Amino acid sequence: MQENLSEDIEVRFGCVSADQFDMRYFCFGNGARTMVILPGLSVQSVMGSAEAVAQEYAVFTEEFTVYVFDRREVLPGSYSVADMASDTAEAFMKLGLEDIYLFGASQGGMIAMCIAQDHPELVCRLILGSSACRISEDQYKVIDEWTALAKKKDRAGLYLSFGEKLYPETIFRSLEPIFASVADTITDEELGRFIILAEGMRGFDVSGRMELITCPVLSLDADDDNVLGPEAGQLIREKLSGNPSFRYNTYSGFGHAAFDTAAPEYQDRMLIFFLM
Image (cartoon, rainbow, N blue to C red; front, side):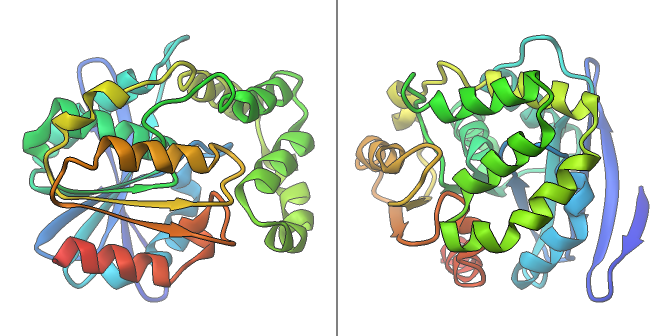
């Protein structure tokens, strides 16, 4: 495992090798408990943002050792959310991770739900951020727009559409020049990965299996979610209403990416739930 030091937090990089895949991850913190973050769909790998993620989740480092997993290195031509979950759970087991405090954002939350349903022994507590237990054709329209832009190799159009849908307008406008400049760094390989991962969400539906999630769950959604819509959080609340340890909070004015835009209150709320 190679190490990379930020000014305040030591970030450690590693790679899990399984029979069928390799999966990169990074970790930080030295707490006795294990926390895992599964990020959402992104145009470029979360690995390039490791130090920024460590800083954003620094509040966890005393109580937790925090792992952040990417998707598998080499993607098959078709790769469903269920496949992503199966590989990620295998990576957890290869590393000997158990009693996991699991946080999944957006697509990462979909993966996390599958893991909690299929491998309940791995998950101690679960937080879902701006996620969905079912993707309707109507909800998929935004993702369809992104894949169309990626297939045309319209890098600037993709990054700008991505930012515009994730963030409230005022935040997006302030970041628009950055999005435009970063778009130039996107490679053809990254566009190909993005298309496969995005198309893996089409038809996703675990809404009929939500009763299998028996651990304590916190759902954090947004009433101004322009990616999945507020109905995504509403359905999760409906399907988990029978879980006596289920809690939720709806953000307003922070957009789909409330896990970034509502920081640090968002992370403080997560920590309180994990330590309850």
